[in-house]
Image (cartoon, rainbow, N blue to C red; front, side, top):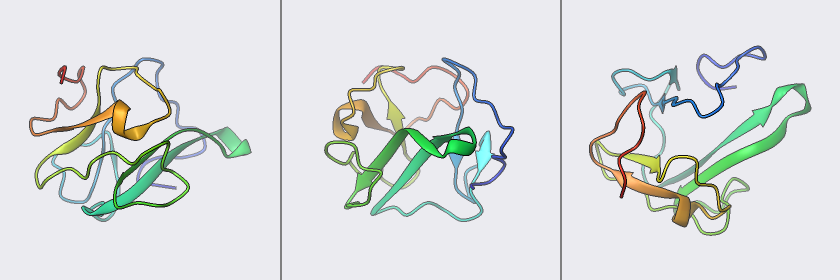
Length: 111
């Protein structure tokens, strides 16, 4: 369980939610420590079944959350953004780009 997620947390369909590490200024959901810069992974699970509905692996990650090829590791003060919004080809390197100007709570900028 990460940050403010609970078993009753509902993410709005086509919503824009931000998961940020400890130093991210205004996340919707905060992780208690900064996420690893070189490589890591996150997954969204559905309800009590713990079925993974989507995941992201980045950088040097080789974990179970990498879909296809890992997305590039974001540089300092950047984020991994799904662009265009709603894209899910099940290949992290195709679905996510590095964004040096995060658009927290709003649509991601086109690459």
